[in-house]
Image 1 (cartoon, rainbow, N blue to C red):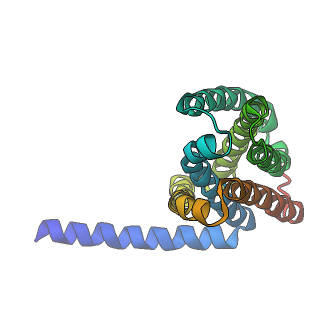
Image 2 (cartoon, rainbow, N blue to C red; image 1 turned 180 degrees about the horizontal axis):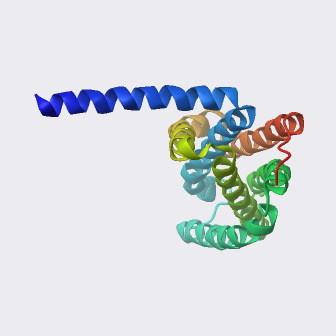
Length: 215
């Protein structure tokens, strides 16, 4: 009996906390904007990761080894992007200014990758740039989650927005095969790029209207 009482109390307190966090995200425009950005960010990543094998074979007409090389060059771009993210996110204001630009840049780079056709050099270069700016955007977004969340709700806000990202990733990954068959891998890759560019434009418009003055 004691166990079930404790369990009910935990579930009740968790529900109350979740409602408070969702209310906070809805009330704070920048946190709400970050939720939508994360949804688009991980939707695009879900498309990209699942699409890469199909794209390598059917568009680039390259052997399976090229898929591994693309992942490698993407990982190098991500490492460099993580290192370069520091100056872009040195304070709240610069992070808010840099997030839309890095999202749009990653989307444009992935669109270039989608249009690389059979040029492996162009595909590698564009995928490297995509990974670099995507990582910068991801680091900045996670930093803004921490800075804009109240201390007592910080972990809950980050986990809630992370759950939104997981939903986007699952949707993107599950739709990839169907979209590739329906519109082709190139157009599917352009859709992933469009989700990133759209998230960047949305973030920019939202953050211009709701600037954070503190540094």
